[in-house]
Length: 462
Image 1 (cartoon, rainbow, N blue to C red):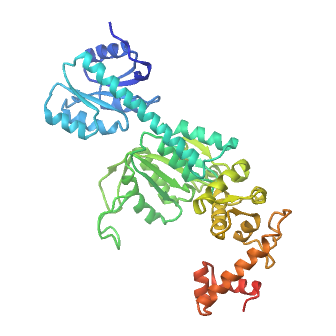
Image 2: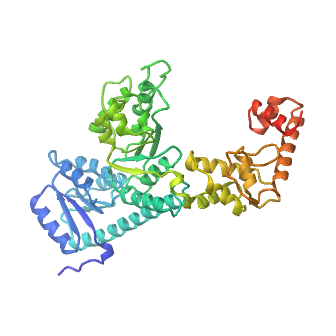
Image 3: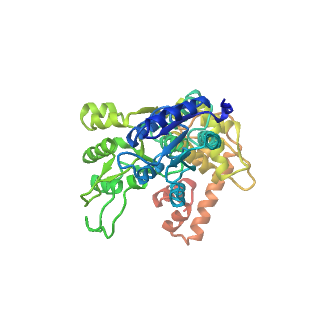
């Protein structure tokens, strides 16, 4: 009588073998151990079963795959089962075959006929590894969500988004991330990659609106030497670089129409042709696309292909605007401040001032403002106050008081004069060290020459 394994050692196993008798006996043996079993008789069935949900925790693979029955056919499958332990077996127990299987990522190698006790032991050990790997991926995903600037926080919208990332990340489905500019869409894509089976492979990002159709095609699919002026050597594209990993298409709504057709062909067939080439290449990537545009409206007006839209729209995630998650502002602001001033804090009126803003630039705007304020702290200051935030935002007049665009707050005054004097001293010192050269002084202050002239006039410096 078989002894069932501990619950932690049980899981879903994909059994790949072309012999019906072995399939039946092997499946019964594994089910007797408490495992859930999926059976496949050839490579095509195996890959389809591996891509189904829920995904298997372990693969048992016979290297003799039809129709050729050559062990090479089975070896070619081993890397396709990424991030899952693969136990291979063969009727040919030669040392070289075992080494090649290990080099390709196999967990263990057994020789037929298979000893049941040995198989039970190897499966239990591999299953523990699979469970541990899954826990580590989940932990990395949690850390990516909780510690990263865009997904940190306890607002309801943020908690929901993190939960969806953890749920969708381990699958292979395409994801479309929608949300306003600066709300953390790329961070969501990276978190999805971190908790996916492809997390050990490359994460490759490209901004679809930053390049012309011709350059975007070359960047995505690569080019051959001599295919255009300046193509001095063969250059692999980002699709090829991302093989086995995640391809992030940022602002896909801005992709030129000619490239939409070529991207659709790649998504449908998994093949592409480098610029200047004739032969097709294959690449397997998980696609995560993002945009701040209304793709459905673009489909209706004809500026975005409907068939491409539905190819990209596997699961839709939405990143909320910062105005929809005001409860997260204090946490995010504190984290951003600690990046430039680890020991500094935010005063009560600073937090109130931050909470009163609308943040059209979302998390990106908050980050830039708080880090700028942290950089303006004096050596003896340990707290960022609202006047310092206003100064960093460019919302203080020559008297250090808030302009009409700033949120009115009471109790702002004791620090205002000091901040105005600090700005006056910085500008004066920069002009003196630059020998009166306004362009050089502006460069040292990190502002434009026009901005410097305005400051000189406002501060009464000539």
